[in-house]
Amino acid sequence: MREKKVLVTRKIPEEGINRLKEHFNVEVNELDRAYTYEELKEKVKGKDGVLCLLSDKIDGEIMDVEDRVKIFANYAVGYDNMDVEAAKARNIYLSNTPGVLTDATADIAWALLFATARRVVEGDKYIREGKFLGWYPTLLLGRDISGKTIGIIGAGRIGRAVALRAMAFNMKILYYNRSRKEKFEKEIGAEYVTLEELLGRSDYVTIHTPLTKETIHMISHKEFEMMKDTAILINTSRGPVVDEKALVMALKKKKIWGAGLDVYENEPKVEEELMDLQNVVLCPHLGSATDETRIKMSIMAADNIIAALNGEVPPNCISL
Picture 1 (cartoon, rainbow, N blue to C red):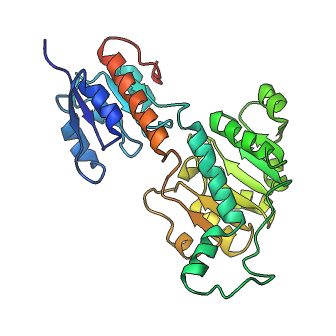
Picture 2 (picture 1 turned 45 degrees about the horizontal axis):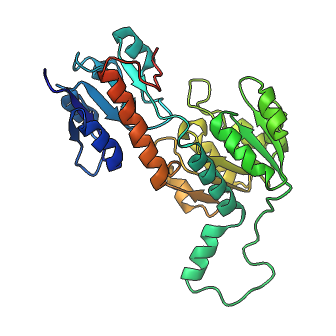
Picture 3 (picture 1 turned 60 degrees about the vertical axis):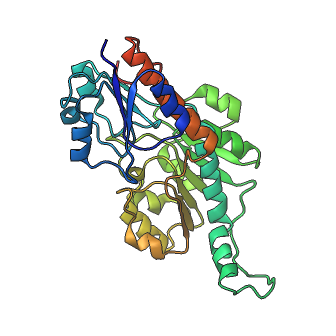
């Protein structure tokens, strides 16, 4: 029997790679960068399965390179890099890694919220530049968090985890979602509101919605006009949900107080003017970046491939 071959498009924790090697011949991208689209097309040839990243565009053209490929397994919970309809038409499995990164992503949202509200990054820089000469009453004043109102856009796993943490700070919790979630309301004590009401009432707005045609630039000029001038925006979902040029304008004109970002509209490129603003905290897509979470993701992605290449439906299939 021919040994099946699997491509891993970027180095991931060894636990997942070793799991694959128990079953298949595995090729791992040894470059310190993602494959280009043309490189990916070449590498897919002769493979039965592909473990890929959000940075890999998995469209019909890629799927047609090799008719042996049974699965493209995303090393991520999101899958806006994948053409689900193209996969269905070709009877190819697509999968993701839901659940395991919920807490890590909720934690980074809170890290950004705290860092922005309490000006942690500015404070660190202030110390390192030798400017700290002692305490004084108006040094780097930030915003209170406890007892304030947080508005959560998207009440899925991560949005719920963010809300649970907000309860510990005695915050008023508002949420906006495509559909009302009464269980979420009962568990959390959250209030279901329109997007407009959420933006107008919230001291903190945090985004946890998937990227779809409907959510591209969900937050743009009009939405920033609705927000309090003391509000802080947090985005750990997908960059294009926020219009970055509109965000720059809102921050420069003090339409909002600050922002904390882990994702970017044209990632890895960041809107140049954001780099010069002190009222925004920037992280390099660290949402799931803990040892424990990334290991779990690698194992889950590997298990999806193992199932598919053994003739089973992957446990986290998104293309049925």
